[in-house]
Image (cartoon, rainbow, N blue to C red; front, side, top):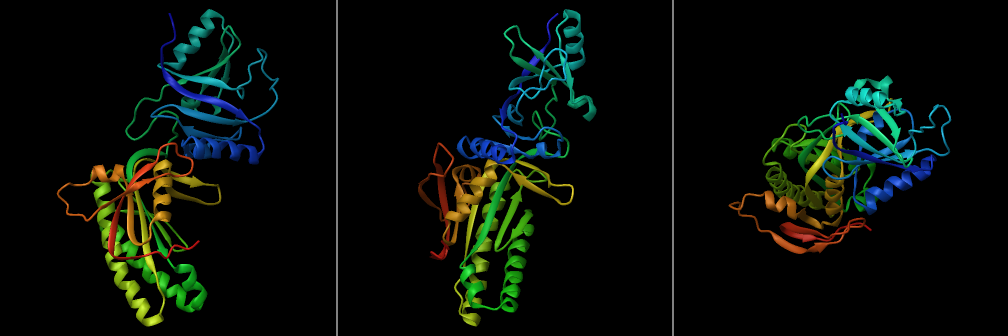
Length: 343
């Protein structure tokens, strides 16, 4: 009988084991090829490297290693470049290899049955890996560890324009209360629309819709949130102008698509967050937006209710660094827009 292979699990690529070379390789696959980094790799001990999502199910694994391991009697080194296949029954596959007398090496067993891998060579000497097919649990794809999910989400970044100049002009005792007013306003609006606040740093805010709980109207919620934020921050900014003679504005970027959600960090600090190409594009759109406008991708536009009377402006496609195809964008402007982007 033959082993039943259900699909390609990942392709492993070897890189130099230094932290610098590993990060350079990750940046190439993420920035040049646009692959999303899978944070599940953070929880995996042992050989350094990264996992990157290549399509709906397959991955590319970067393995930080050099030389050859000499601890296997058959000369099988699991850190070599190899192709990993997902099989229907790993125990049956192992029994079949034993029946045929094909040498193999067992890896990952210490992390539990679901992590076990079988490494073997084909007649040409190429290294292959077999591992248990994980099935299609909701929100997860092959290669994910427990605690991480892949979900469809709308991601929003909101950023205050002119904040650096405000910080230079005012004392810390004046700046901090302004930031508190700003974040209190924006987080309140986001939460009222069902958003999850993931990060507040400096004068920036990241919000996810449809995560951790699914929302069929995630994009609509994000755009409604942006519209209310622009209107209400416009009034707050006008008040600051009257009281303190400072000029500020709000720029927003929104994108929708698949994200990876989970706890990311180290043994000393971790936080629940979202990562992936969808998040990166939303961040880039926020950086591009002028004060008083929200920019969002065509993916978001396609999700919106056509009956909603939005005064949208279709803008020329935006070429983002590291992406082969430009991103079609739309603008939701406030009544007044000023270019306060800080360079």
